[in-house]
Length: 103
Image (cartoon, rainbow, N blue to C red; front, side, top):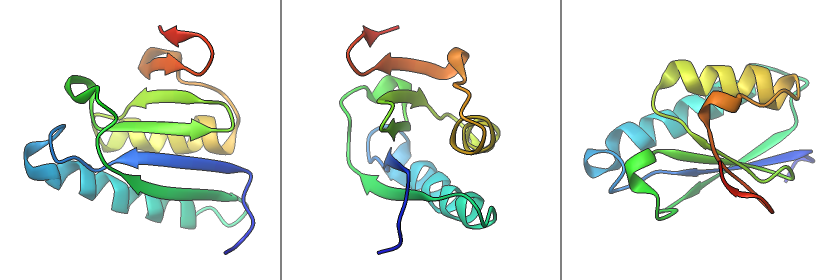
């Protein structure tokens, strides 16, 4: 396993999108977005339901413990660029923070 500084867990359904198809597609796009940035050391892991399906798909970034509602590819790209690459949270898409609760 390669070294990494952040770990992203992403729900791939099946309840947040019909049959999990959109969620799985976003997970695959997340991998491509990470791999297209050579200096980015992020591990991604597919997960099942985080029990907040109405806001899904959900992406959780550690070590920060920030939970995002990742509704489409545009939001996913912004999370990768702004949070994973540049260290800036997308506050408008955060639904939960570790140690704080729902926001």
